[in-house]
Image 1 (spheres, rainbow, N blue to C red):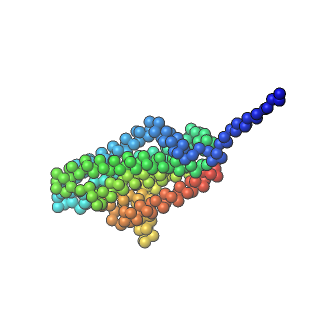
Image 2 (image 1 turned 45 degrees about the vertical axis):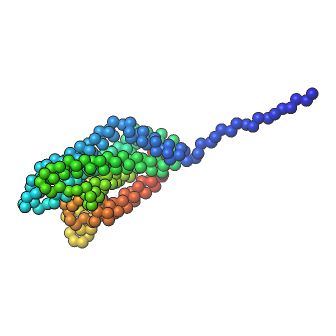
Image 3 (image 1 turned 90 degrees about the vertical axis):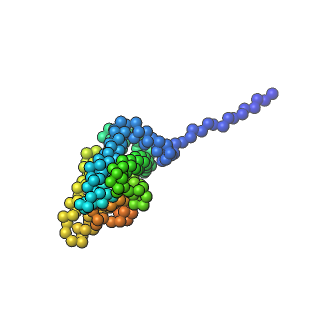
Length: 273
């Protein structure tokens, strides 16, 4: 009797993709990194307190004056006033989401696990943007609700429609945009203090100093500075009437942010971690 030998097919070990895990897995990883750090929640809480709290405070303190004939400002200039300060914490969160990994050396592990470095940049950008948009919109909405209560008592309340609704949603968009802008600068500079300093200088200081530049060039420089271009969408009535129209300005800000992200992507692929 002849024995028949049956050969079993050799087990094949699945080879890892050269680009690493899928985008969904990278996205979950970036969310875990952001959500499990206490500084994230402290920063988001500060965003809400500054954005909504200061709006309510300024409306309470100025409602009577705004209703009088002596006021030279519109109530719409104050109803989102606190969002100017909420952008500071958005800068901090966007910067820390990137630079903390560089300061601890964790970025090496992240990039080793995900060889396609663009996925890391995209996932981190998306997580920061979505979180800040949600928090920023809720902050602007709470500021309107609290501040408008004092304005209503003086007969100058602003309904949540038209420019007011645009400003509430725009507050979320602007805060999210600033966080994304900070993510890009964080990948470029790879240093926490440098990133926060540069972005705050661009948003809050250089935008105002551009007013010192004379002539038409100075006027356009003021309009095109990132903070000035993007902020109008978050205000019912801007304090500076020379700014670009809200959506035009935000479009300019989005292009500036996109250009920085593209540069960050190039350098992230070329530089060592």
